[in-house]
Image 1 (cartoon, rainbow, N blue to C red):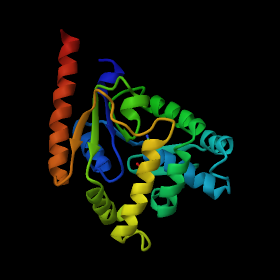
Image 2 (cartoon, rainbow, N blue to C red):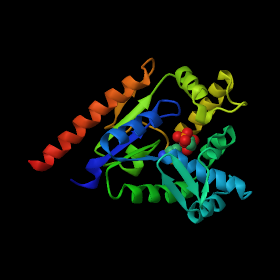
Image 3 (cartoon, rainbow, N blue to C red):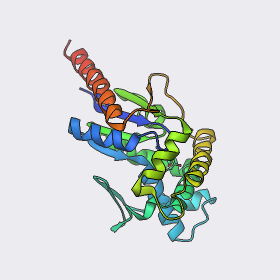
Image 4 (cartoon, rainbow, N blue to C red):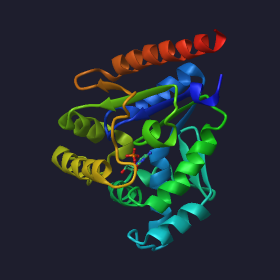
Length: 230
Ligand code: DC
């Protein structure tokens, strides 16, 4: 099998359930789970920490090039410093959406994401995995949900909740602003790949979403294996 035939791309907006679904899928399939949003967050965190102006594209790209990002299961380490919790604040939500708009930063991170996928057997989640990072991925899933439901899920997500962000109205408006930025930016905007399966998870318990995606992915992976054997 070629490496593309064991790459599962999960894209969609914040709060659509990508993280839970991608983690469960990777566990069930014995694949590696890669959260590319955490990479944009880690670069944003380091740039802010260094006092870099987030509008300065080349300075932020230099940060992206110089940091060593280690993705170890659900932990993310930047130059030996574990930032797993530090990158889930409302400030990093905003900062990561800003750095994700910068083409030079995306080039660096996309290169790293492709290198991680080189060996295959990866479930990679993000915004542009099926459209840009791995357009030849065997399976592309686009998870979506109504904005109110995504805000509710995000507010209930302990990893993302701080005293300032826990109120639903605040979460909803921050989510809306970030989504608008992700969908309208010039480089790699969030959009549905033509060959992606769109799943609207509104009103679906997350366990049901996982079951549905898992059976779809198993079917598609089996189909590409048997195509290979023909
Ligand atoms: O998934 P997340 O909320 O942790 O992502 C953080 C930011 O990075 C968000 O603004 C979307 C952006 N992002 C992106 O542009 N491309 C990706 N592949 C992953 C995330």
